Amino acid sequence: MNLKTTFLTLIAGLAMMTVGQAKAGVLADWTDFIVNDIKDIRCMHHYDVYVPVYAWHNRLTYDREHIRKYNENPWGAGLGISHYNSEHTWSGIYAMAFKDSNSYVETYFGYARQWNWTAGEHNQWRAGVGYALGLTQRHEYAYIPVPLPLPMVGVGYRRFDLQAVYVPGVKNDGNVLFAFTRFHF
Picture 1 (cartoon, helix red, strand yellow):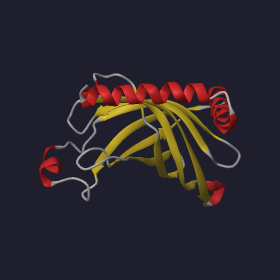
Picture 2 (picture 1 turned 120 degrees about the vertical axis):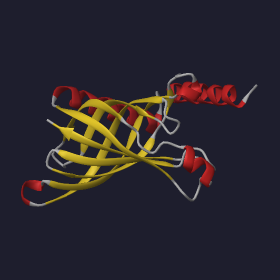
Picture 3 (picture 1 turned 90 degrees about the horizontal axis):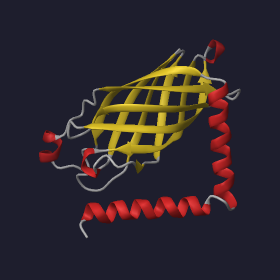
């Protein structure tokens, strides 16, 4: 069995275990929370346009050869719907397509939540932390959807946000800070 097959088998097994465990305990509560939040997004939302701006490969985990060959300009776009609750927490559902590190098209479909601290008159400034849960599709995995939960940070002013997720990894793979802008209407 090659590395790619082993990886895909592991991901499929983890996904099946997660679904099986979703009916009990804390995971069920967490799943219910996300499902209810997604229902709220669908009922009370505004539209978002996403524009990827930078994919920084962590220089502490990559050698120079890889840094030279990797694309750090992830041209692409995305669309989504989202809302802010009364505590200024942002939640959204979105899809993006962009050029990955090897200049192939990559997609990401997901749900994200960011808890914000606000400032200014009418709370127009914000900064926060959160997470993104979704599926990515990449060339090296034959575009088979792969689950990808990621930590997220963001800053914003009025209808504009700069957000970023960090893709963890190993030497010369992963360890990418992916930054994108979000304009909401």
